[in-house]
Image (cartoon, rainbow, N blue to C red; front, side, top):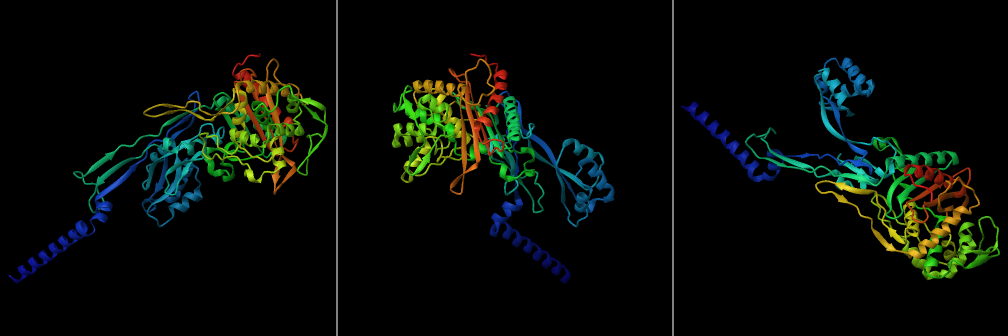
Length: 551
C-alpha cells in the first residue's frame, strides 16, 4: 500500500510539473513561445522582373541557380568526393577540401551552381550533399549597358537588392512582393498537420521595356571605345536620344563593368558618369546663351560684333581660344569660330539678371528627373557671390557644372521647338496593369521661332568649322564642339580638358541628338579633334541603321 502511495505521489508531482510548464509557456511567456515555437513564418521570394530593350530583347532576367552545401560528418571518402565535385564545378580542390574537413555540421561549398551541374552531382548519389534553390539576375549582354542597368547585389540580411541605374531606381517594381507561409508547429518544431496553415500569396516583380535599342547601344559603345583608345582618354560618355521626347536610345560610359560579375570590378566605376559626374561644359554651352539672348530679343540674328582683341573683365583677361580676331563678325560667326569675347558681348546684351534666369530655366542646378538611380544636380555659385568675371565666363560654359544628361537635355530644347523635356529610359512597365511612359514637358524655355533660328546657326557652325570632318554627304547636320579645362584646386589645368561635341540631324526636323564627351584625352585636348570625329562615326552608322534619307 505504501508503495502504491509513493507511485501515486510521484505521478501527481510529474503531472503538476507538466501543468506548471504549460502555464509558463501559455500564460507567462505566451508571446515568446507562440511566436517562435508554435507558429513559424517563412518568406516565399517572388521572381524578379525582367528587363528588355525596346524590341523586347532581354537585357536582364532571372536565372535559377543552386547553393551546394555539405554535412561533413555524413561524408565518407572525402578525398574522392573532393575530386568529383571539383571536376563538375571547378571550385578548386583545395577550397572544397578545406570546407569538408571541418567540425561543422553544415557548410556551404559553392553558390551559383547551374541546373546542369546540379544534375551531374546528384547522379553521383553522394550522401551528405544537398542543394538550396536560389535566384540570380543574369545580364546576357554582359557590360553592353552596364551603367544604365546597374546590378542586383545583397543587402545586410542577404536579400537581393538592386543598386544603381534601372535596377536601383525601379527596385520596388522589379523586386515584387514576397509571399508568406505561416505554419503551426509543435515544441520540437515539427509541422502540426491539423494546425494553422496560412498562405499569403506574393506578387512577382514587374517587367520593364526600355527605350534603349540594343543595336544602337552596340554601335555607340564600339565607337566610344575605339575613340577612347585612339585618343588615350581617361574616360568617356556618349548619349543618343530622340530630341522631341528625350527617350534615351543609347547611353554608354567607359570604363564600365559586367553587372553579372560586378564584384570583380572596382566600386569606383559602379556610378554612371552620365548622371552622376559633373563637368564644366565649355563651348557647347554657348548656343544656349545665344538662344537665350535671341529669345529675350537682347540681340537679333543680323547684329554684328567688332572683334578687335582680348577684353578685360574685372581684372581678368579674356581672349579667343587661338588669340585671333576678325573684326566685324555676325552672331552666327561667333558660334562658328567659338569666340569667347563674342560670347561676353552676347552676355552683356542679355544682362546679368536675365543670364541667371535663363541658366535656371535650362535647369543648371536641377536634376533632369531621368529614371536612373544616382542622378545629381549641377552647380552654380550663389548669386550673392557672382562677380563680373563670373557672368562673363558663364557665357562660354565655365564657372558652372552640369552632368552629361543635363547637357544633352538642355541642348535638345534648342532644337525641338523650345521644350525642356524630362529624359527617360523605361517606356513600359508590365504587371497586372501595363503602364506606358508619356513624354513630359518640364518647361518652355525658348520660342519655336528662336529654335528655328538657332538650328540654322548651328548648321552653319558645322558647315563652316575649321576642322573638316567626314560628314555624310547630303545631310544637314547641326552641332557644336566644346573644350573645357579641368578645374583642380581652385585653378584650371591647361593640360587637362573635357572634350565634347553635341550634334543633331536632320536640321529642319531633328530625329537624333548625340552627345560625345571624353575626359582628359592625351593625343589632343580639343573637342573638334576627338569627340567630334567619334560623333560623326556614330552618326554615319545610325543614318544607315534608321534608313534616314539625305535631305
